[in-house]
Length: 112
Length: 118
Image (cartoon, rainbow over all chains, first blue to last red; front, side, top):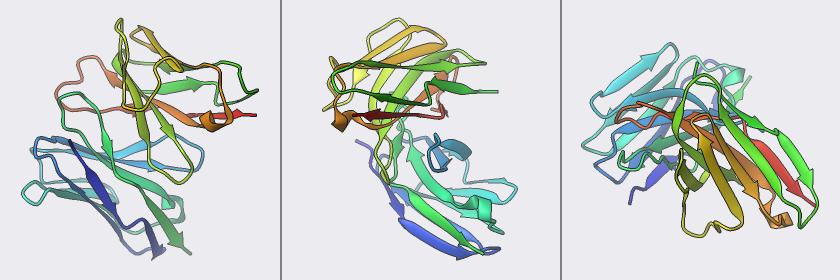
């Protein structure tokens, strides 16, 4: 079955700098790759997603890139702000049963 | 749009009692709903997948008689933790996939329910 690995587990960046979180997946049939932001005590919030027919997608300060050949996708956050501090999860969906396979999460810390 | 609510947001109960958690899709119809549990500093763990009008499919290791799931309508799914014990204390989160969602598995998540069993 699908397996998703996420790195790093913790990322500390200076406010205003960029942050990059990387994920790899194993199932070439996966066709949907969302990124979620989870704040303490809250449910995950979808911040951006990418489908397998697209290589890159951008939404203001957030972008996601997908390399299907290498089976990895990355989240890029530019001009980081204190409110970006949270845990970020990547996921992959093999599509067949509509389940999401989750990465282990990255705790992003924005230093003032 | 695409709002999912959960009720209650938190609950404290005594060991041996049952607790029901509701998950509602407020502005769309959900053909499929998912129930997750999350322990502190860990990722989400899928417990079961439920489709409206049919029995839920449970993940390996999840006791179906302990975690009862009912998906009676396209906007409501419930999770009942029966005979709760302290080890059932966790953060329970539901998500919903919209009817006609196409081949891509976009899921919308509820805010979660914190269950504490004394």
